[in-house]
Image 1 (cartoon, rainbow, N blue to C red):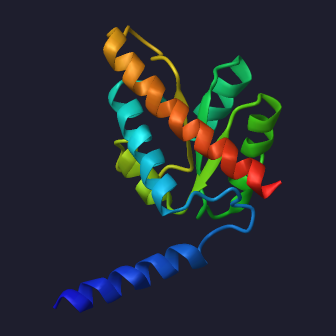
Image 2: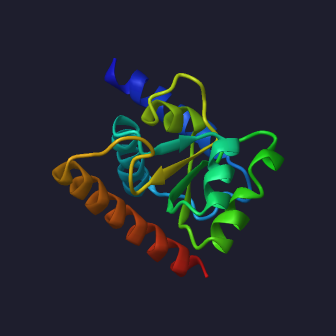
Length: 154
């Protein structure tokens, strides 16, 4: 019984890998992906998240800083090809995760999401100092891991 569910899980993971876009680099590994999605979930709870290509591009152009998380299994890929370029110009770290469904569930939405931008401070209202420090420390940890991964690719 346990092996069936395990076999199904590995088959689902293989499908995710097969559906990945060829430009999905730097792609987060399992550990970094898990930490990144956890950060996205916390940011969504604290209203520090921009969802979707349109909102993310608008925020980047306005000069907001943060971490851009892009789904790697987007079809057609033309939808997100300009986002990494914008991120590099604005010096915003970005990372690809394997699944848009996982990204949406972490961002507390039912609809699959192409990309999200994790902001360092909330768009509306204020956070308590303690919550803001927790979010920033987790953000900094993931951002350093992403920059290390990016520098290892170059």
